[in-house]
Image (cartoon, rainbow, N blue to C red; front, top):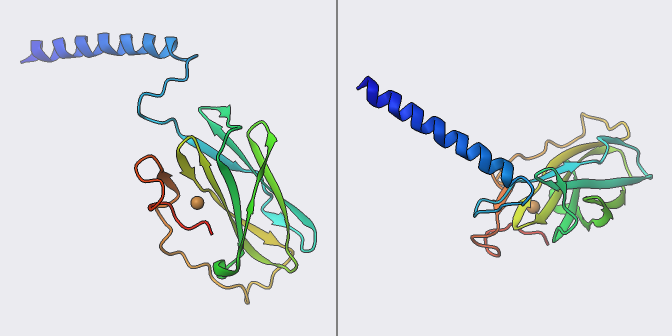
Length: 169
Ligand SMILES: [Cu+2]
């Protein structure tokens, strides 16, 4: 019984050793054996802004630590808290080094939210950020409905690209 377990440990130790070597060798080649490397989207938009001034909407897209300059699209959806139906969807343009940008001007103080809908390398990633514009009267700010879109933050488009993805208008 114990011998058997020790044998197993030795074998797995050897296997781990092999895997380490493999990993080192393949470090330079971006190996993609069925499992896609996670696409990361970091929002660069400030969390505080002013009304009637251009606000830069920006997101940095990376995969395995490398800039992604070939994203299919990066769309910034911005809406005032509790009024997502009245929001805007603006397509970001590649600014270089994996950064996609656009601008928006919001004409009144409020609590806003932004999604950076990103389609890249067969994945859909959509981080969310709160943007506080000016000095909103918090007593009049509508609660953001925290509903159905949970769990849609990341979707693999490989299995069903059209019907599963949510509505981007
Ligand atoms: Cu999305």
